[in-house]
Length: 360
Ligand code: 13P
Ligand code: SF4
Image (cartoon, rainbow, N blue to C red; front, side, top):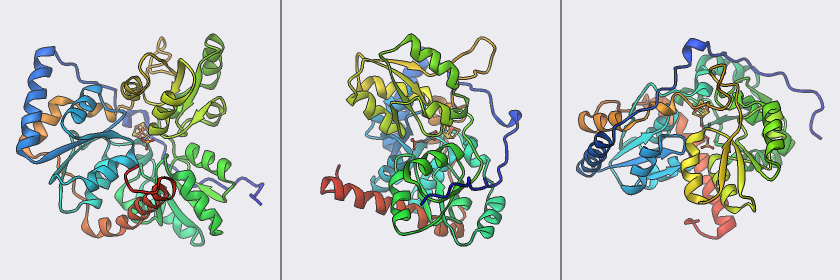
């Protein structure tokens, strides 16, 4: 039976406000945007490069990825696509752990990012040395880390998971009788623990974007839109998740918007996702779930400041100069490949189980 006593949380490094950059989305005049788009398309061809973008990036980048044979997706599928695509250069538009994962899986390929300073608060809140010490104190537990971690943290893990795969992997480990040490997101970890009943010891990290969703304001918004369905990413606090009609990964949220029998949705995740939601479910209405906001008058303006560092100007520049190449220490990469491969193999086997082939 699941232990009644709450496991003690692991240590965390709380980000200081000055470590969270201001959100500075790129602003372009139409003429400059068109010129950049043309330049990037030419450079992608010349350099045998392909764009792999996350749903939270600027819609301009997502459009360009789609138009040039690249891919826009969640973190698991970005890794899979980059690995299977024949291009010799992967340009990862997202945050650093996504670039690192691409490099670890494809050491022979050149991996570029528009901005190497695009971090992730979960990654920053889980320094490798403190994490290793935490693992050392619990040698009997299987170490499961979220994709949103550094290569060095993955190098210490048995499994990597993403929000789209965490439930399946943890159920699988629980069925084998394994007890889990989980890092770094406490909200996702708590949700997975509730859903699976697994014995999980949690690191105490959080995403600064999802943690800012406000449960009371959400309840008021729901009262104003009683027909709306609520879609929530599991990095959000428990009181927000409790109000959801659907909880899942970014891909899961887009699919829920398409599939669910509703016209209006309140969405608790980074609003960059609205571009693909509108494509998947045209005509439906999407409302941002309320956040604390950065200013007194702002009730729903939370963007991931690191995702916003990806823009067309920087993308053109790195393709032109070869700057911002992602490098991972080969010894760390070799060890970090183990939990990443384990997840990709597990996800492929699950797809085969469900759909009977690899293409689904
Ligand atoms: P997904 O794997 O669901 O795309 O999530 C990545 C992420 O960073 C969410 O904040
Ligand atoms: Fe990291 Fe949160 Fe940004 Fe996702 S939204 S990349 S978890 S900081």
